[in-house]
Length: 84
View: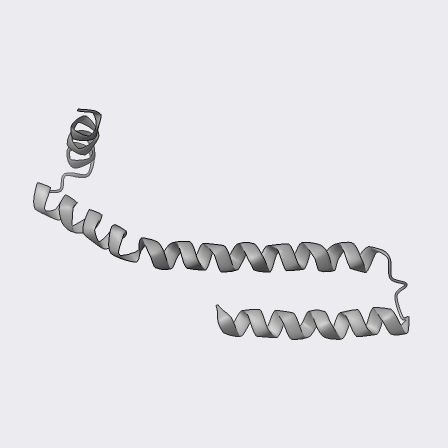
């Protein structure tokens, strides 16, 4: 019952036909798995960068370890930007 009420208000609010509503719903469902995969990738990337950030805090700017971490971070940035 609530789904019908929700659908009715959706259609009424956006003034689309039942056919259009079903088409939007089908498109959403067809692409939902891809969305979830992308969302998962972004979560992993965020986790990696949070870890990088924590590691940066213990490094002294200009040190060898700092430069190595900087180089690894830049590689990761370039890799992730090419993936997404």
